[in-house]
Image (cartoon, rainbow, N blue to C red):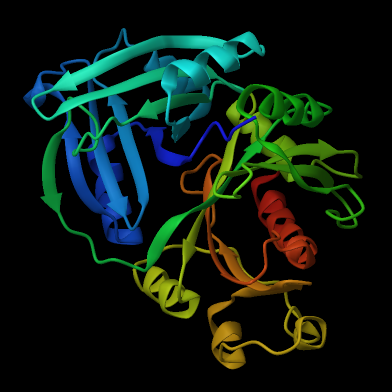
Length: 358
């Protein structure tokens, strides 16, 4: 089967106040605001702000009328990811294949047009209330038809592209969605972790990564595993009421500069457990980055047989313990920081305990 999806086109978040959220992502993460759709452009139902940094495109959407069903979405989930849009070469072929393979159709293929040209799109549902919109650009030069270009610059922080997007699903549902992605979108199993790989004294989870053949699209899928206390995955599902997107991993080329800039902008990151760096260098060996600076900024490091990676995770971006951002730099490694799972979990458990959810 030829590869069906090329890359993540954009990620759409439903938020309670898109104007304020756009300000936050500009000031905290350094995104540019590049397009807008709302009453001023003829859409009186919703306001959407398009943000870009590198090849990362985000759309922040707010309903403007009390009868809009997105209000129910917000009540149930809070601010979060509603749509992971995927760029494809042939919308009709990908949509038909997915639906014939069992995907639920949300919007049939149709052209969206304005004075700059046309884009063809279609949409299917995936886990929880998350959607995948397929986008066939057909040479279109703007973002998408219906959006007016704007230019509000942010102070870039070095973010370049979406490395992966992680979904949390209910207990014993991970394999179902792994099979679903393989069957509907041709995203095969890349790597798996069980509860022996990802656990602490109290909690555990299982995870499988599905990916396109070229590894440009990567979707880890997590489910809770039995433990002495509530898993972070179960806490997420309880707060979100269903399965959903746990985090978006954004790649950078110089994580020292990026994390320093993000911290200076007020972005809150998970704390590194005490003693993390005591035996880190024995475990991961030599790295090009300054060790003292890595420790000062609280950056996690892991190595596999192909190289190493550096990563750090923000705290949840809203009061519900749901969506957060990962910052990642790869130095040859294609893995997902298995050696850091225990440290990450211990930190999350500390925050769960503070919320009374452990």
